[in-house]
Image (tube, rainbow, N blue to C red; front, side, top):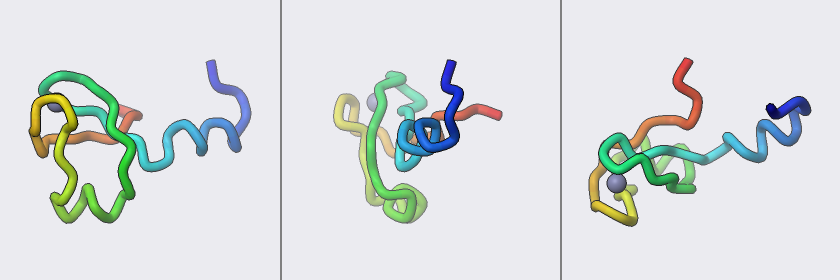
Length: 53
Ligand SMILES: [Zn+2]
């Protein structure tokens, strides 16, 4: 669906999905790695990058 690298980067950069409730959270990569980011909805820290593969 996304064809341009720029658009893809904009969409995927700093975007994470909660493993519990599947809501999207935009946060700096570093913060997520450090575990400082919680899901807004359920408070879970289990986030994954938007892209699965
Ligand atoms: Zn959640």
